[in-house]
Image 1: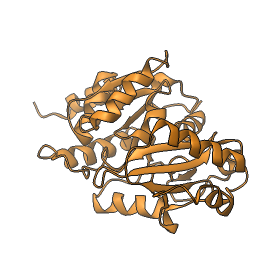
Image 2: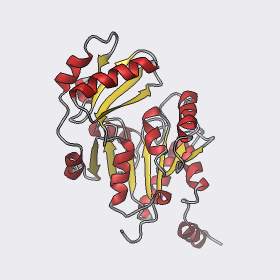
Image 3: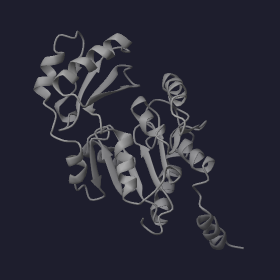
Length: 278
């Protein structure tokens, strides 16, 4: 266990750290988010950005919104882990096994109408992603999973909705990959239990992590259908802790941290009091 680590802070990027999914944030929300991350890093709290984006695109979002450099990056829906310098975590890659055979997977799905592969830059060695124009029926989900598991048995499908277009995002990844597994992999390095792992998100591909026994938060701008799915799935996860914030984006993150008593820490409060002019 690493001494001096108060907890692991982790958060989804789009729609959570970044106020960029259509709902209007409160004035000063981004500035409060930037300040929070700086304060966490100054307090030697590891900060992990978790994103469906590939690393270069995630870094672009960080730069545009002027967020501090995180300690860790989890990218491509939990199939890739990087340190703060952008070095690839090779141990994580080994755990996921060989790269996906995308051509074989493509052939297995090529006669499903309206299912279209995403752009090449959005794919990864352990991630094959598709668009679908509307919510998937239970039958179609089962059909897709059956076909891809005929190619490789240990695969799962993560489904979320792109809020701007309302089309579905389908990610085929190994069963031992995903935001939740990658988050716990990073937490292993610090020897932290779930009550000292914080994760916030807003979309369907965040739910595995939110429900994994960490201090989970859905920010206030989380779509209704994701909230409903979280509530239904929580019934099957006895150890899940889910707080639904009222505030949007980073303000919802701050609300969640306060709910779990993780931040501001007693040391931070004491320091603030000492630094306040009298």
